[in-house]
Length: 538
Image (cartoon, rainbow, N blue to C red; front, side, top):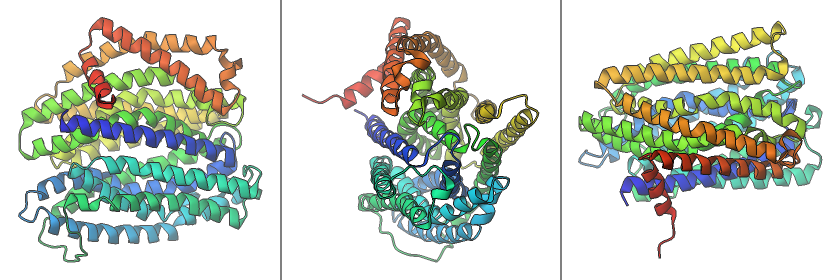
C-alpha cells in the first residue's frame, strides 16, 4: 500500500468517526436547546460561530495556504526547519492571544452585527455566551498550527482523530447539563448565569482538550520547539506577504457570513434560521469532510512537494487524479444525501413537522458539493505555488455573490414573494450558486497558469458519475416513499430518522456503484483499494 493510500485511509477512518460523533453531539445539543424556530438555539449558534469566524481571519490562509508549503520547504534547511518553526510558533501564539483578547472586547459589537434587529434579550444571551465561546479562538488556532505542522511532516492521523475527543467531552457535558437543569432550555428566559457558564465551559473546554491531544504527538515530528521572539532572518517576511492576501480573503468571508446570518435571523422564531442552517451545513459537510479532507489533505502535501520541485507535469497529474477520485466518491454521497434529506434532517429537529423545512435548506446547499471539492484542489494548487493573490480574487467574486444573493433573499421575503419559512433555503441556494461560479473562475485561472489541468478528462468523468447518480437518487427517493414518506416511521423520532436515512443512503450507494460497474468506470479501482485498506488481514 502506498504512503498516500495509507494516509488517506487513516484520515478517512478518523474523519468518519469524528463526523459521526459530531452528529451525535449535535443531536444531544438539539435536545438541550432546540433548533427550528428556537431563539435560544439561534443565540447559541451565533455565539459559538463567532470564534470560528474570527479564527478564520487568521487560519484560513495563514495556516492552510502558507504554513504547509513553507514547512515543506523549511525541511530542506540544515536544521530541518527547527529555527523557522520555533519562530513561527512563537509569532502564531502571540497573534492568537492578541486576537482572542480583542475579539472578547468586541463581543457585543460582533453580536450586534448579526442580531442587531432581534429582541434585546436574545442579543444579551448571545453576548453572554460569546464571552465563554470566544476563547476557543486560541485553542482552535493552536490545534491547527500544530496539526498543519504534523500534516506537513506526513503525520496525518492525530489531526483527524483529535476532534473525536472534543465530541465525546461535549456530549458528556450536554448530558450533565440536561440532568442538572431538567427541562430543555429552548426559551431565553430559562438561561440563568449558571446554565450559561455550564454550556460555555463544556464547548470551550472540549476544544482545549482537542488541541492538547495534538501536542502529545509533537515528539514524532523530531522538531525541538522553543520560544523565539527573534522573527527576522528565516523567511517570515515571505510568510507575511503571502498571508496578507489570505487575511483579506478571510475578512471578506467573515463579512459575508455575518451578513448571511443577519438576514437569516429575520426568520428566528418563525421558521428555519441560523441554527437550522448550521445543522444543514453539518450534514452537507459530512461527506465533504470524510472524502475531500481524507483524500485531498495527503495530496496537498504531495502536490506542494512537486510544486516546490518545479515539476509541473506531476502537479497536473496530481490535480487530475485527485479530482476524479474525489468526484467519484462525492457524486454517490450527493445522491444519497439528496434522497435521504428529509429523514436526515429529522435527526436535527425535535418534531416531525419541522423536518421537511429543514431538509429544504440541506437540499439547497447540495449543488455546491462537487464544485467545492474541485475548488479544494484548485485553490491549494495556487497555495502550493506560493500564490495567495489569485485565490483572493476569485474568493472576492464568491463573497460578493453571497452578499448579493442574501440581499435578494431579504427583498423576496420583505415583499412577501417568498415565505419567511423558506428564507434560509433561499440563502443556502444563493451560497451554492456563488461557490459554483467561484469554482468555474478558479479552474479557468489555474488552467491558464499551468497550460492545462486535464479539465476535459475529469469533467467527462464527473458527467459519467452523474449518469449513475441520477437513477440512484431516484431509487433512494422511491425507497423513502415506500417506507411511508412524510407520514411514515422514518420521521417518528430522531433515531428512526437516522435509521431511515441510513437505509435510503445504502440503497442509493448500491445502485450507484452497480451502474458504474456496468459503465466500467476505472475509478472503481479506488474503491476496491479503499476496501482492501480497511479489510482485516488474514
